[in-house]
Image 1 (cartoon, one colour):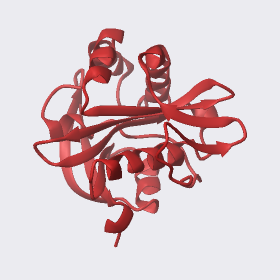
Image 2 (image 1 turned 90 degrees about the horizontal axis):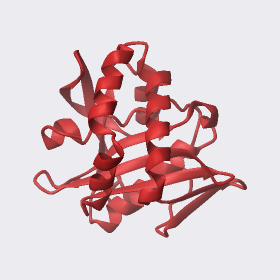
Image 3 (image 1 turned 30 degrees about the horizontal axis):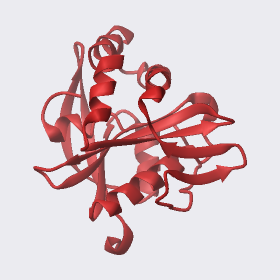
Length: 205
């Protein structure tokens, strides 16, 4: 994404997944077995087509109610090309995990360490609609928290669209507190985001 670090690294962490719980944290490349047929692993460039597919399908299912499709498409075409994602993956400040169900990618999370702010961000967390409600979102977040702890971070930060009420409720339920706001533009649409954090590891209250 482009723009300021606070605006760009926190503004698409929404997901539509309800009634899920965090899986047990693990620091390995293959992070957690959430069910017999679900595995979470670090992403690679081979996952770029799946990341694009998951992003677009989740945007349509989640954001189309309050962001016009043409604005979603404009932003997607500008920021989620294969070249842009490959460059993002090459940046050591970024990381990511993919959740696969029976070896089929079902969701992913993208992380970013913002040096200037000394914050660890979950920049994106998406799960395909047909795989929601299985704990995949929680497992991806658990993997991100382990990566944040390895970085020495005390908290994980993210942003959620204000209109995405159900997702905000899910994040609050899992320990996030929202303390900031920032506008974000997709095409001709400007959406307010709530930015929050969750303390992790030994830093939890």
